Image 1 (cartoon, rainbow, N blue to C red):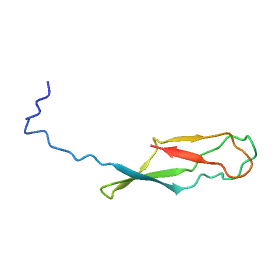
Image 2: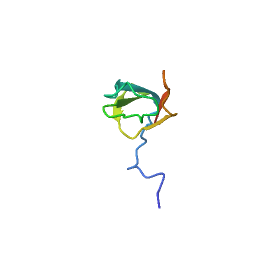
Image 3: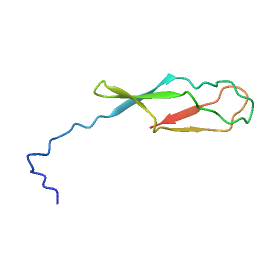
Image 4: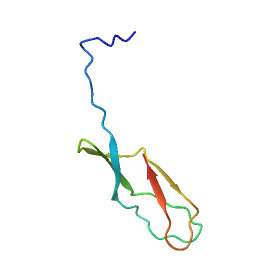
Length: 77
């Protein structure tokens, strides 16, 4: 059982993510229509409200089918 009055338990402030930045773009940037995206080389960083940041690998990527022109790609954490 966890005792909330235990003097050995210290409050740890919870950092809040405020933005995601692309540090390095993927190696491949130009595609043919309907070709699968290859995100090899993509480096993503998360920035926190306490002015710290870290490179993350547990992000997800979502996008629609590749079409001719610009395509929107979402990076989520």
